[in-house]
Length: 447
Image (cartoon, rainbow, N blue to C red; front, top):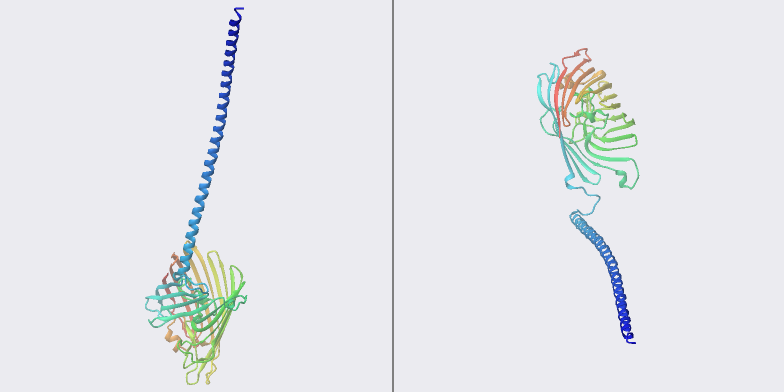
């Protein structure tokens, strides 16, 4: 009986110990669980922080882009406001001031020599051509062009001359709201639009130094319409007809027209017609149209002749290929005056053929044959002395010219040319025209 309290104590102690162990085990398990929960929460928090930082970065980038776009937008608005404030008053498309005027020119520096019967028997150096051109845009589809001829081969003085001076009104049909082929109205002083050679007779465009014998060209005052549709082009002009530029001494006007057709890129043809109108012997004296290195003039004396006129017809053709071209023209001129003492009607025929071919880099060769036949005789000057063959001679019934030369393109605006021409003719009295051969070299400059 004395052992029962001891056993009971032992049992109680064992129970307490067991309970303590169980409590310790439960505490450890609970701590581990709590740690795992904390680790999981920390991972979720780090993930959330990372995603939040990423979102913040994206929002910051979008905000910067919006700010940049807004700055550009503000700058664009400011620029537009500045342009609007600086722009001229509203009108039909104003032109920028720096592009309104274009100045250009060309010069020919030459050495000419002919035989004793020619125009240059003394082997002379000369300024063959010196011209300045000015183009100005005046308004929408309105342009002014003028040329100042400081020196030209055909003049016999050293004074400045006005070349072309005209205004162009483009797209005239659109003014009326009509849909029509291109049409330009020209008014002023401009090239007589007969034939094709006048467009390529400048020092830089002419492959040789001389021109064809016929060499039909001239400036005259009047009005002109020109344009085209598809493969067709046209030009029609009404001009004074006489050589004087300050007055017109007759009411009959010159009528000129040309129609062109281009069946292929390499081929073009045209047909031209012209009447000078009845010109006054006392006032006009000569036609404005240049022909045979002279003009059309009356054959009858002033005492019995008051008017003269000429009608002309010409066909032109041109073929081009890589490095060369071929050009040709054939025409007739019907001349007459009202001389009461004689019949001075003439039927004059003329033609020329021309070829050019590149021979090497920047070097080309060119040839031209031209001829005029005037049964009954007419004042044909050619390379002869102007005073003799235009005013005093009995008249020439046949004149031909064979020209050959080559050119060297030093640069785009610089051209050096050489030429030798043989020229022969026959007067109506049977005298042969000789000693007029032409030797020349010329340096052409363009700016």
